[in-house]
Amino acid sequence: MSAKLDDPRDSSLETPEILPYTWSRENAADALNSTGMFLSGLIVVTRNRYLAWGSIVFAVSALINSHPRRAKEAGFQGWSTVFLCLSALFASYFPLFVITNPVTKK
Image 1 (cartoon, one colour):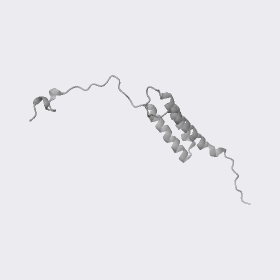
Image 2: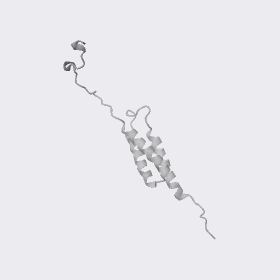
Image 3: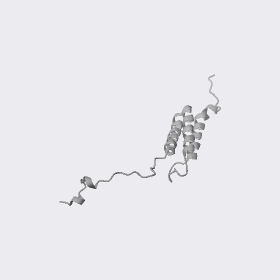
Image 4: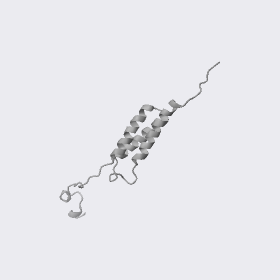
């Protein structure tokens, strides 16, 4: 049998949990960037023009909320998400401005 000092079940050996002074939180800009990129891909696939405006709102919000001290080394960059959302907006509205010759039956 183990000694009393080595017993992990002994309640006198318990120490209270102490949280650190600076509690790190997840970066909210990463979640906004991921949502903006997901919506941009969804816009390109479905050609939904209304989702494009929402994805731009997510991208601009992520760009505003990103801070160099809060960003991880491998985190998303805000500008890349903004450009991706703008290109998805362009891709969704581009078919409206393409001039085509309609085929008419004679």
